[in-house]
Length: 364
Image (cartoon, rainbow, N blue to C red):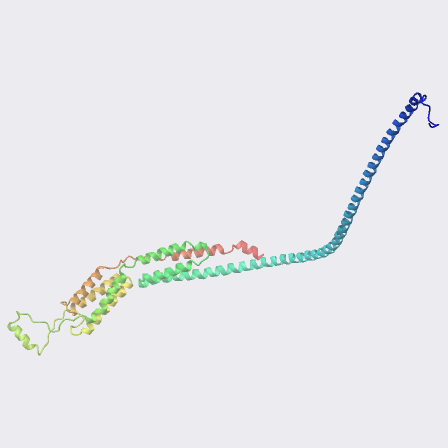
């Protein structure tokens, strides 16, 4: 047994005394270790968190620095662009100033050109008014001349067709007049022209054609025979004496005709001349001369041509029908349109003539 070991009798009594303080010291030691471990863990976590935060902050700072550098680069580029734009804006401002000056110059030139154009328009307007009045005056003179000529032609020659043609020309000339005051005159001109056309016989062309056909057929119509056949009852003594003296003395009856029976050429020419006079009378709208010419032509056919021939009978029947279709002798009253034209021209001349007061004021 070791000397340091207690005695067996004293060990049980002394053991409880020695174990009690040891258990009390072990409990604080375990708590402090756990606390130290907890504190160390907390410190480690705090250090890790701080490190992580610092890393995050560094990464954020690095990113911010990069963004700042990018922004600085972009700002530098923008400043460079702005410098270029400033130079371009200065050039543009100079160009705008030059354009503004040019615009003001052009505006002044345009105003001057406008004044010149207005003066030119006034001059052209005055010239056109004078030319227009002269143009209308010429047309009105021509219209008046045509109306006067148509009236004289109808009164002298009874040529209604020629007068109507002159009236048509007058209406056409009057339509070219620009003055509206003469627009109603065309109705009067057209009314007189229609009256002239209505006065013409309806079958004038047909009658002229028939007369032309008769004139062409006259040279072929047979004349009366020179030796007329003797009557069967003339066998007396006086008839025999007459036949005996016929070879010595020729006695013929004069029925008052201006032409001998034997002169056939002159007879045809006279009939043709009468037919030609009938045509002229029809064209001149002269019913009296028309009837006289047809009567003379019919008398020539009856006295100088063979009345037994069918062609002569047909020609005389045609003359009788033509003589029955006499044209109307109602004259047309002309001159109303001419008088109206002269009145309108007189009124227009008075309206365009300046008043004495105005002329005196202009003289001052």
